[in-house]
Image (cartoon, rainbow, N blue to C red; front, top):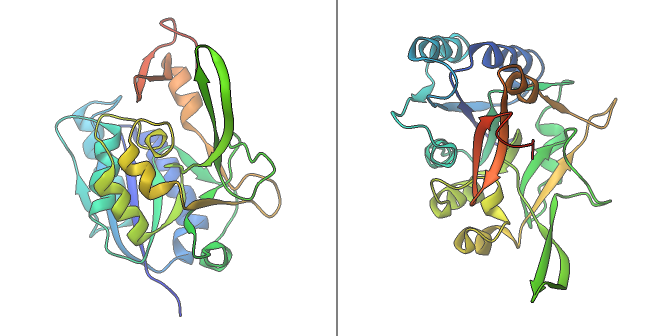
Length: 248
């Protein structure tokens, strides 16, 4: 029996990037999924309100009945919480506005990966490190008086493009803290309540069939073109001018 999917999309006021993302996924991915509802959040990030309006129009061109949030105050985690909490389907295809698909794919390759302990399937991309494992992990180092006393791998999850078990995702949204990086609070010891939920579960990698990567990040170059770098500070991701600090 096939499962229905909701589609969630987190975007900024970045029309050119969003256009490329939607064009790519509309060609190679969306037609392969039984999408029930579309929920999007457009934050006031990078562009002006007029560009935000054009982004909303782009989404509605593909999905006329989409539920679209346009909050006054931008916050990455709040955007993720908002769209995830609004879902109802047993599976959720989650996207951001700065990725392209590198080949067609659909549920037939994803569903077999959902074993009982799997909460999500993340699409392989250049910046993911497998450490020789089929699922995503993060290195956790414990120190005492400056000395390393533990060095272990813990399960990690990603908010880059992927598919989530719907219940796992909605429970994660309930536990997630606004203001913190939505991805890193799954495993960086900034949100123990979310870690309690997530660490026992795995996030599986889905690789491409003709190359390792299944999706590509087009946001890195776009940020570099306007002189921005993404930094991780005090549990949150922030964007600053490139001359303020090196790329993390």
